[in-house]
Image (cartoon, rainbow, N blue to C red; front, side, top):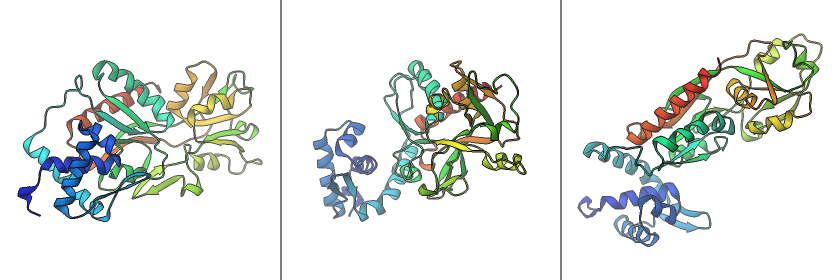
Length: 326
């Protein structure tokens, strides 16, 4: 194939179909009709001599040739854009869509205030939130389907970049009127009252030591410092009882209602949930560790002006949430 016969716009179509796996969505992204996208793919097939994508019930599935081509072509497109310069990013006039992977805790603490800020600063920008608990999170970042993942990561592969957003410890939540609400919590309370804990993935999802590893990316699955709790209660006559383990942080108020349970949660989540006045936040009666929330993105997006702008807005929102911890 001669490069002189290649329309670079065809490569943009290839990238969009490869990432979206859907002709209609690829067309919307490129402001083209579905017919135009199909025509572009037909021209690409003629140039390459391969089908590139197979139409299935699950969408457009790339062939082996397309999968092999994708990394180099996408990298080449980024380099071309960097070399010739792209149109400056103007948030107040942008119509971009950013996909963020976050759990419901991060969505409540960071994404919600970020969305309110964007209403004023960038009213045309859309946010799509995907669950960061999905087992193929790293693959989705590699494919370009997720722009930014926010969470606690113990291991980040070299192809991905990261930024620290905020550090926090743990808090304990209880319902208003709980027997322990009028005093400082003691260690014995953690064995006297049943516990509610957060876990977004267990051994059945491949979690080891509280983390799930996929494609070199290790993300936290157990959202409390189990080791610190067990160490504090070592030698106790009674062991703590985790009566409820839940993957959805925003279900905690309903679960604590009319119960004697104590919930061990990230401090920023405790602050957010206690604002309603129905829950009481307390410091744990043991020395829990501090975790750092990070944003992770693919290295190819490092110099994308819009992406960089989003990262700054996310970091600003996270700093405000950290300051609210007091």
